Length: 140
Image 1 (spheres, one colour):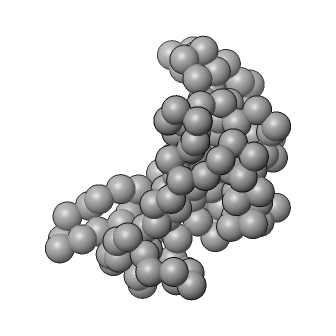
Image 2 (cartoon, one colour; image 1 turned 45 degrees about the vertical axis):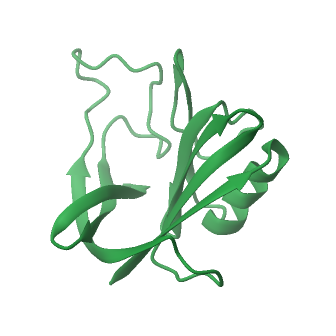
Image 3 (cartoon, one colour; image 1 turned 120 degrees about the vertical axis):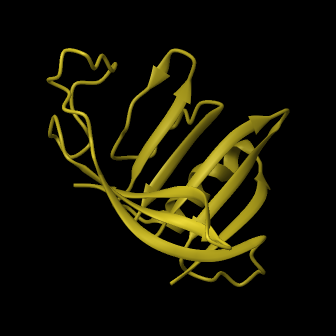
């Protein structure tokens, strides 16, 4: 399977619609700041200055730079414009930490699935035998 990486710049008011258009409704969104990190099952109005959203359709990562967002789209679907990068993809699954484990101290009580534990489905993007990045797909 092929994976495609696209880099683009979006205005503040374009990011939320771009996420919904490319990832669909069944997604997980993780806006981040120094004091905030919570996986959500929806796209909030405040996307913070950095974050990621993912679904089976792809993963979008963003970071605010001056008055725009620098955005990376990882997907296995070739879009109409040429990708910035193309690579091979392998499926990989991870166990998530149980939120009942006393060593774990997140600022949220449950994963977006409503559970306190689970598995994370991912794709590893590989170029010339070397892993480039891990694309998040879903939480089970």
